[in-house]
Image 1 (cartoon, helix red, strand yellow):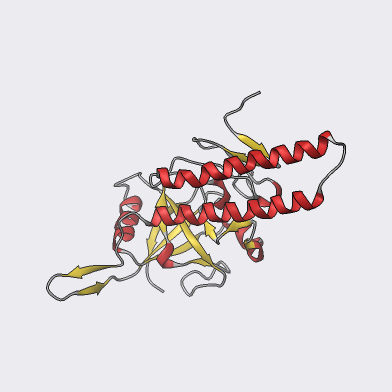
Image 2 (cartoon, rainbow, N blue to C red; image 1 turned 30 degrees about the horizontal axis):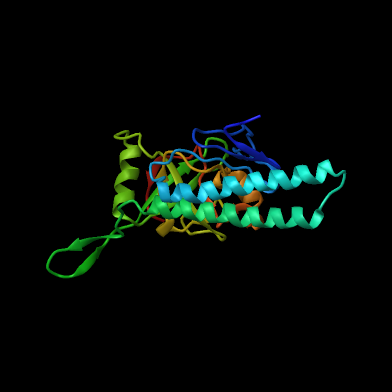
Length: 238
């Protein structure tokens, strides 16, 4: 029986679209050890990025074959399954890092070039309040790149609906401007997206409660992309 996706030990890989559960706690399809993931159609998703996903899907099918073989022989292979889980964690981490790399590859400058001087004029940081649609507390995001700041202001002002969601790399300690959480986003890593892989999707409250797990099977690479995230308003600097 053929299928458009490979489903292995709670792992669901899709060729497109947006497949997820409606778990209100995590806000994502969350299989064994947080390793349930899917491929969305990101505005920055390119053929070279898809190659990584092709490799992962092939690996998932291999995992499925190994698992079935253990069942067919009325036994189990704990060492093989342990190796499979470890390899899958590394692959999902690579995929998440690849996603962030391609998202940040969109033209964005940390400053404005001043003609004739060869120098880059500093950009004043901007701060925006972000919600994930589930958590009681909002996150404050610091932006330091001119293009991202302009896009954020267009989103808040209703001038655009493109790339409305926020992605960034988690830093595991509070920031002066974001005291409500024990983590914040690295300002240099923050960008926006339309669709993203499911492995980096989690609510703010769930991430706060499981912060010690971030960077492992949960949010590999410390990359966070809440699918329901959106900017609420611009706030003043602390």
